Image (cartoon, rainbow, N blue to C red; front, side, top):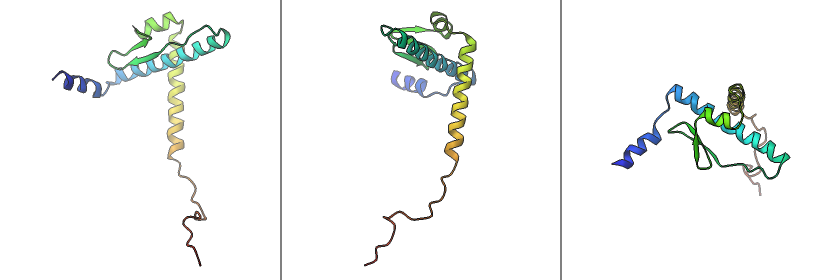
Length: 120
């Protein structure tokens, strides 16, 4: 009984507000990893923690601790503007990927060798 309730919670669709919060959390995650990688290049002792966006609570899990978007951005010194900019950059990237995938490949004029009938 409890498993079926959990299954519904996992499979549910996010509301538009939750979707934007989730996308913001994903953007914050990407920014955190990016800034930590840059710090790691300068100082090899900097460790990049395991970061996950929890879809249920819409919080960031950094190692074993859960943070709201505000807490995580304050802790790592990231501004709301940076997060919004990253979200927009990622959305633009997704749009570009969608448009390039839709383009049809040019028709091949010559059939491949496996398709050519063998003449004996």
